Length: 421
Image (cartoon, rainbow, N blue to C red; front, side, top):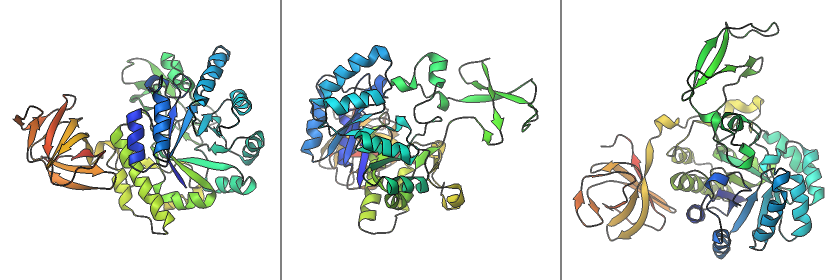
């Protein structure tokens, strides 16, 4: 089994590997779905590949946009340049570009992106016969459907998302962002319009004869678009207000393995180092427990709950007949019990130097998190880099020294317990 974590930057890549990922995925600038937030330019991706291989792990290069005609030649040129860097696979979605890569770079495996939305076994068989090595399955599948795919095409590697944001459309195939401000989701510039804040307004109009679920017609208004009302539609299947809860499948890794999943993928190249590290560590521990035939540790759900979230769901993974076993006990984002205090960048005996991300003060309850474990302590002393004692430190103002009550490991992070002062 493989734990696959996002590498949104060279720094995040190192944290993902330190906290337990077996492999990471990073995007080609301009040709992956994080074009606006992608620092892997020039030789940085090559350096990242070399670093990952030195650690004995793998790096998959994401090139999964669906290019229009005007981008074909530049896409081919970019693939050729990155093929020379020795990635462990290309993650791709466009059939024409996949055919090109299989012909020109046969030594590099192709992993079929979730953008292709593989939802049935004949598609799995088609891609297997074409030469694709792995399919990243669509998030809309149940365990039963995955099992059927694995049974019918056992030679295909299957990868599935286990944690992170869920798109309101088939992964990445949404036009909301393009409609609102001409930034296309599938060209790597999505503005996440489905997650904006909206108000619902009643709107005069005719009710349909076929279905009348509401007393009147309704529309939504985005918080910063005063007066721009968009109809809310509802039919016999439900109301469409967008914005899913976050995916969480940590308690279902055993059934997923049994269904044929061999790579468990965490979403979030744009998320913080704090989020990436805690989620990766939790899934690492869950997979290790599974390998050793230990029971699932419910405490890992609480560990994940320390990160920002919108509430959790297993989405479509558990079929309707079995959904009563699902748990939604993690907090909403507003109830998040801990927040990211800062990134530990240095240490000396009894002290840690912290790049502060959120306000902290003397007396706050904190938690030092590291790849191997964590411990809680009360902040008793803080100093500026100059040595001056301080009582409050604010995020974004650089680093401060914080007195620690225990060891400070490489890649440590500081978390703050809410309402601890």
